[in-house]
Amino acid sequence: MLKLTRKLEYALIALRHIQGQATEKIVSTKEIAETHRIPLQLLAKTLQQLAKHNIIEAIQGAHGGYRLKKSLDNINMNALIQILEGPIGIMDCSADSNCVQLDICNIRKPINRVNEAIVSMFDNLTLADITRH
Amino acid sequence: MLKLTRKLEYALIALRHIQGQATEKIVSTKEIAETHRIPLQLLAKTLQQLAKHNIIEAIQGAHGGYRLKKSLDNINMNALIQILEGPIGIMDCSADSNCVQLDICNIRKPINRVNEAIVSMFDNLTLADITRH
DNA sequence: ATTAAATACGACTAAAATAATCGGATATGC
DNA sequence: GCATATCCGATTATTTTAGTCGTATTTAAT
Image 1 (spheres, each protein chain N blue to C red):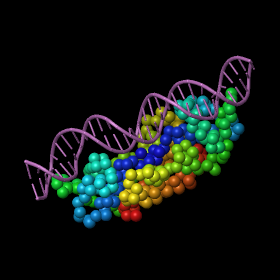
Image 2 (image 1 turned 45 degrees about the vertical axis):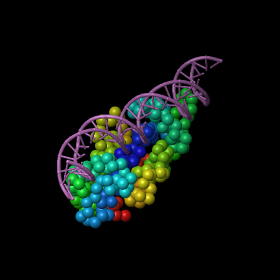
Image 3 (image 1 turned 180 degrees about the vertical axis):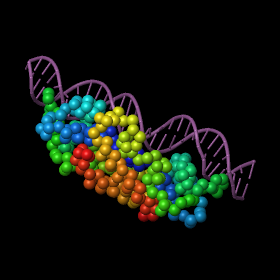
Image 4 (image 1 turned 30 degrees about the vertical axis):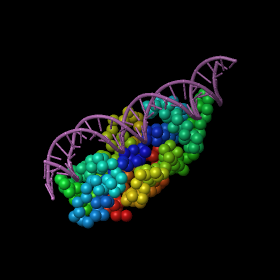
């Protein structure tokens, strides 16, 4: 309940790892996976998603890997969550909505306010805030 | 991801329903379940948990049911979550901790800060805030 | 007393979400 | 050409959440 996913966790660990290296160094998935004991394939797919969304840059082929493409100051946690998991919705009615209850529901509005508060919190948290401290 | 559970949702709906009735009226699980289309048994168990923790009072036997025992102003959302789901932990290392990573982990501290921010948010949200708006 | 309607509660099953793996394709440095 | 990477869809395994079942107990009404 109210848990972030492993994928997200792995993404943060990886970004922090990459950030810790020399600016132009290309870091392979394998290096990150072994250093932090993360399942290689899962990390690979996660990094691919980040590359597709221009957070990191992929360099293919032997000696390939990734490096940062954007400063982590300019990416917020909410954007990362969107990329990896879609929009935050603490209850089904917060995001899409095909709830059985519909108009019967007596708590939708307040729940949506809570949802917005959480979104706003993650909007105001840059990835640098997480990877630098 | 970052979802509240149905149990919690049902609890909030039920509390709001009870609060909407005349102060001393005893409300049965069945009434709430039917009004809001909630699976009876699941709601029953949820209300039993709330009763055990003195948020509502159970009246047994025919014509039994529940009524509020505490003012919802005096209970915060975090307490309700604790009762129904245990402590909030957005990642495994936030709550207990038998993470494979342990000291290898490079994001534990910032994640814990995020966790605390969420806890604090729910600490400052009373059930009345949710059930009255 | 008996019955009906309610809470109490442990055990179980079903469904959904998440985590992880597999298999093959493509790119590139040596 | 081979080793080592990213790329990516499909599948399987695991875990968590949701829901059900069966039974016991309590109490009002008859």
